[in-house]
Image 1 (cartoon, one colour):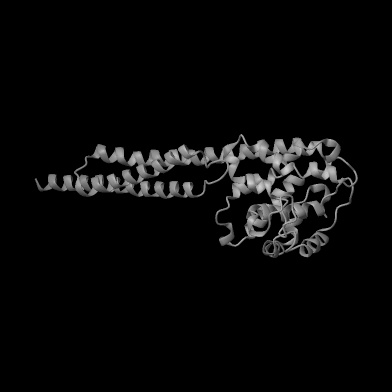
Image 2: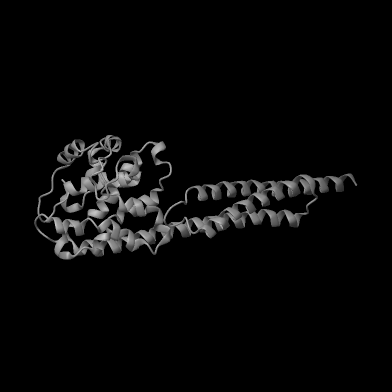
Length: 306
């Protein structure tokens, strides 16, 4: 009888250990899923309000299951079969979460690929833009990396990447005669050119997940002194738009255009310094100047690197 009792106690210990292992795995699942929710506020993964409801409902269910594991381990008398169901249930949840991460990562990669095709169409209409959108994207993301944590808060890097790549999408609505004009534009032509941020927002309007970046694209030509396209200034300009303005300015200076030769990195830096506080955000310019030369030069299209 003593031997049988030892066997029972041993089996019960094994069952409890399996359930505890499942509970630990469920805690890991909850942490991973919570990080997923915290980091998916972007144009690809944020989803609709209904999607957000189900995301947070799933999180509550995971917590509910964890409480169930603890209750069963402490206050119930589970058998071996129940312990197996609970443990492999945690494994199943871990597999599903991993699949969600992988599928979302693939969706983001495919999304960028599609956007790059669209940007290629835009730049095919305007030789002056050849490589410009990609350069603005890379410089903007480089600037984002150098921002202090307090400034990064609230800016999704995924959304920022899309906004920077699509900042000139509205040029699809600008006639090629204006885009390809070798000389300076007259006032009437400038009026048409200045509509491209608004046209860009209109193009993206059917994609409601892009609503977050509409203002970033719309206001990327605003100036700190209020002399930009829409006459708004300083803190009224979204921070991502101010970041893209610096990247756009750097690219415009260092790229070859039909009407001008490219200027050097050093010249671009001096020009950007000179317009800090009037055209560009002085605090962001200060951060931009900390980026090593080689990293900024690496963002230039291959044909103009030096």
